[in-house]
Length: 204
Length: 204
DNA sequence: GGGGCTTTGTGAATCCGTGAACAAGGGCGG
DNA sequence: CCGCCCTTGTTCACGGATTCACAAAGCCCC
Image (cartoon, rainbow over all chains, first blue to last red; front, side, top):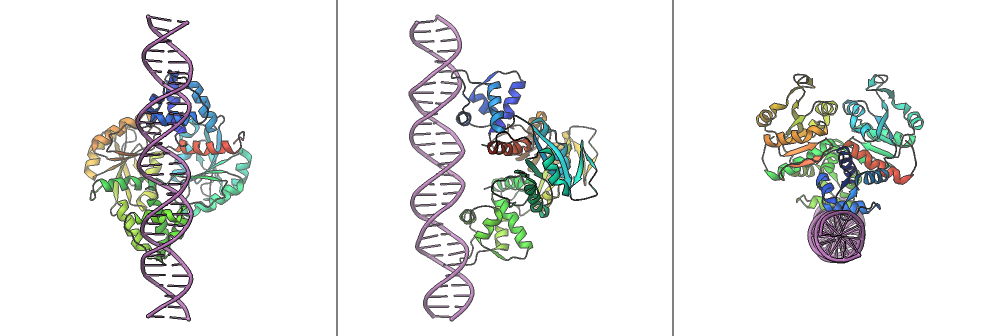
C-alpha cells in the first residue's frame, strides 16, 4: 500500500515528540485517512496493538521499517544532471529517509567532473560500473523524455530493478522491473481539471 | 480521472509524428493501460470515434484540452526558492503543457530580488498581492515541512484553490481547496517496499 | 451496391478498496 | 477480584473501477 510510508513519516514525528503510544484514531487524523483503514492496514502485516490502549510507537515503527525494507539504507543512481537532477542530488529529504544518491551521471560531457553537493558527475557510460560497484538497485531518471527510454534500457542492463521516472514518457521495461512515474505537469493538469469543473471560464 | 493527462501527452506525440487517427488499442499501448479502459474513459466525455477507424487525433486532442481545462494557460505561484523550488521555476515541462509559473516567493529575505530564470523572487508577504494581480488559482509549495502548513494557510487566504504540495506533510485546508501531494521520498519507499519483497536481504 | 473486416461503445460480471458497525479483549478503578 | 470503558481486529455491505465480451456500425474492396 502507498499509505505505509505516510504512517512511517507520521510515526517518526510522534516519536520525536516523545509519544510512546498511539491510537488508530490519532494516527488516522495525522495521516489524513480513515481510522478503520489504519487498523486494517496495520493488521495486514501482523503488527498487533493493545485493545484499550493503542499501538506502541517504537514497536510499530520497527515493524513498518521492516515491512518497507528500511532496515538498511538504499543506494540510488541519478541519471541526468539538469535542473531537476541537480535539485534531486542535493535534496536532503532522501538521506533523512534512508535513501542515498551515491552516483550521478549525464550524457553531456561538459557536465562530467562538475560537482553536485558532495557528488561528482560521471559519464553515462559508467552506469554499469557504478551500479555494480555500489550494489545499486534503484535508478532515478531525470532526463528529457526523448532520452528516457534509452536510459531505462541501460539501467536495466546494469541490473537496476526499480526506477523512479521523472520523464513524461511511458517506459518499456521487463516485467520484473518496477517503475514509478512522477510527471509534475500531470499533477498540475489534474488540479487544473478540477479547477475547470469549479468555474468553467476562470482565468489564472 | 488521472489518466486523461497521459492520453493528452501521448496524443501530442502522435500529432507531432503526423498521425491523423488513432485506435483505442494503439493509444492504450502507448499510455500503458487497457484498451477497454481507454474507450470507456473517452466515451465519458462525449468524444466519439469512428467505428472501424478509430479516433481523429486533432479532434480528440481538442476535446481533451477542453475537458482538462487547457484551453488557456494557468498561472501558478511557487513558494520556496530552495533547491527544489529553483528547479521547478526553471522547469521547461510546465510551460510546454500550459502552466506558467508567474511568481516566486520565499521567506528568506536574502533570496528576495535574486533571479530564477526570467523570474525575480519576491517576499512571502507579497503572496496576497501577487495572487490577486495575476489571477492565480494554483499554488506550488516547495518549502521544508515545518513551514508548509503556514504557507498553505497563506495561499488559501490569498484565494488559491489548488495546491501542489512537495512538502512531506499532510496539509489541513478547507474542503473546497484541492491538494495534491508529491512526496519524493515516499515514491522511493514504495519502490524499496517492492525491492524488499523481491529478495529480503539484498544490500544496495 | 453488398459483404466482410475492423473498431467502437456498452452491458454484465468481477474485483478491490472503503467505511461503518460490532464483538472480542485488555487495562484500570473500585 | 470484578465490572466498566476504551480501543482493536474483523465482518459485512457497498460503490467504483476494471475487464471481458459482444452487438452496432462505419469503411473498403469486389
